[in-house]
Image (tube, rainbow, N blue to C red; front, side):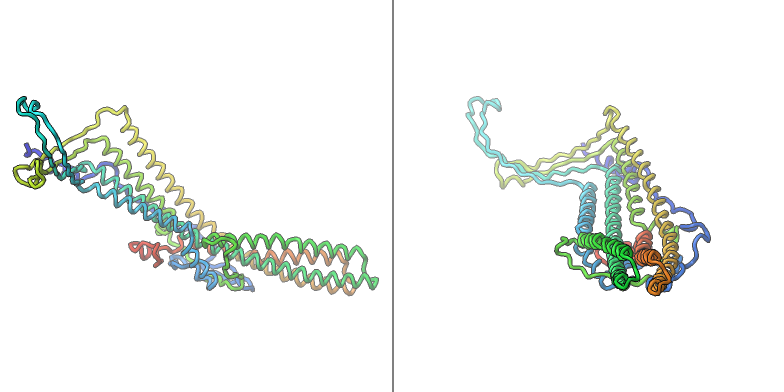
Length: 496
């Protein structure tokens, strides 16, 4: 009776050498030559004669350091990011999700092995002799002991289990790059928020300087009124422009407080407990060399592209799972043990009992359920492929937009630097002419407003270069492959 089973096992092993369903192949990288049309951008930006106005060079194929934010050379910024990486709830959640996915995959691998369980049962029973055809024998009182080891094994004849494990592995890979995306977003958001904080501080300082200058001009105008050289209308106009300037400060200070609260959230700190160091634009160094990845390698660098590639892999493996569910399922079960009225006799050879069962289950009719499930898996894979393609396009768009923005930022800063200096010189000249009677007060007011707008715009232009530089590092993947911290996978060290 047991002879067919070795042949059945051998046949199943031969069949299991292949798995049904399509084998996943990562999509090829786009064949584009670059992120912008040829000659669309120069190899370096223009410069401006101001701190943060240095020219930046675009270096093709330049690698990205794992801690790219250190290029800003700001100890305060470095400390802020280190604190966030250690205490961010968002990052902790992503790390826990990755551990969960890895453990789920490891648990599913157990399906490759037989399931073994032990069983022991003791039964006290009283039986009548009549049950055995002995009506005069009276009754029997005895204890029945039974112990057995049960084995069950599902033969993965068509690779359904392997496809399921493959799907879970891909899901874990997806979660691994979701973690990298969270890491990159967190660090880039902190840099951007820190730059915004520095910009607001500089805007507040510039506005306060302007307000002091306007107060001085108001004192001069009042003195001229007292001396009969100006009208009361001039004083009222100067007071109006001074109060208009002062009215912008509460909003700027509120925005600064909100930006500090945002940094507190990034570092896992409550607003009232946040005590991060103040960051100023003058404490930041603009990176001189900017990386421009090779497009063929770029898709391996972006965490979101790698995440959607893994999701496509997962969906592809699920087609195999759905296909295998339509095919025969082969199982082997068996048990070995002993049954005796005395516990000490359970393990005697005379008490041995065993069985071995081979089974094949073939779905015959399920109302089309399995067919439609497979079609649904195919559609899910098609959707995943489209999502992957959309993610790649968005990734290239991000880099292209940022490269254009960096060039525009440099040009804007150069122009704004000239505009601010011209406005400041014009104001000084008009004020001197007004004192000597050579200019009207309307000209003074116009020059003051022009200089105020130019000073604040210059601060914003300086900050924008720092922020868009961070955006480029983020768009290129942030150098996760060069990291050495615990969230980096040791198998992914080195250029991807």
